[in-house]
Image (cartoon, rainbow, N blue to C red; front, side, top):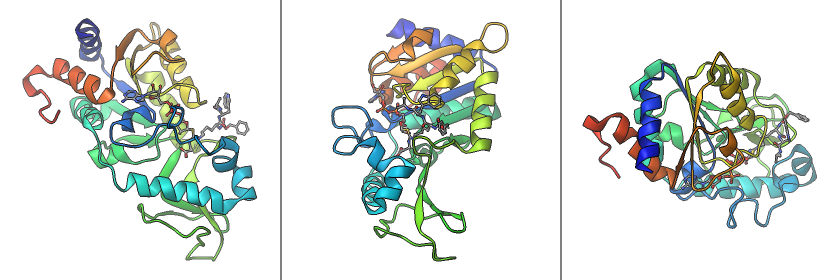
Length: 255
Ligand code: BV8
């Protein structure tokens, strides 16, 4: 592992621009269930029932129960050292750093990350089916059929479900960041969901030599064949180790 961490740190030292793609695994050590592990979120819930527009149309109360349970869970957790390491990485690269997340838990922002692209939406937001107004509602548990305080229309979670388009500007910015970066860190994702996972080949294939892909995961994934360097272990350990190697003089103390 140390040799891989040193190679990854060297790639970062030589990078002008860095992009990161995170998935549910980066929040696992905070206590947020991932999607496809044995205890994953999809357990007991079919994707079609709780994370598609048709599922919401069929049984909106079931969907709100699912999302209220996730809001209640996220209200009890805090960022872990992996989130904090990504804050340090952003401090190191400044405005040449972009964090793209598939996560809707808001833990990157809670940790202090600033340039965060939430390509799948946010648990903290609702969107009105009547007036389309998006509101920040924090993590308060909402009613099973919440209505819009402005027009009385039904509210839905402001989350990108399957078969829905990603928010255009955010997705464009994410593709731009992947296409420009010299290093793409792929952290805690099974790389099975598209178009999010397409950021990896985008980063790999642009310009002359493409970006260096560094995968941080417990195990190899669908992304591994594109990865130049693999850091396999809990991201709450591998990411701080990578930052310590990048910045030996300011090793992260909050292990
Ligand atoms: C769309 C919101 C256009 C819900 C989510 C090709 C191109 C385009 C679309 C498709 C395509 N192929 C298929 C599709 C359709 C579909 C799709 O990708 N299906 C998959 C299942 C094959 N995509 C879509 O529908 C997208 N929309 O394409 O629009 C369109 C429009 C109309 C008609 C046709 C097309 C929308 C996708 C967005 C869906 N919404 N989230 C919610 O969050 O409530 S996706 C959901 O999965 C989450 O966002 C999650 O983040 C994401 C990805 O999962 P992961 O984050 O990777 O989580 P997972 O559990 O899978 O993996 C965790 C990883 O962490 C594991 O590898 C594990 O080893 C690791 N790990 C665990 N612990 C740790 C760790 N790593 C490090 N440290 C640890 N401690």
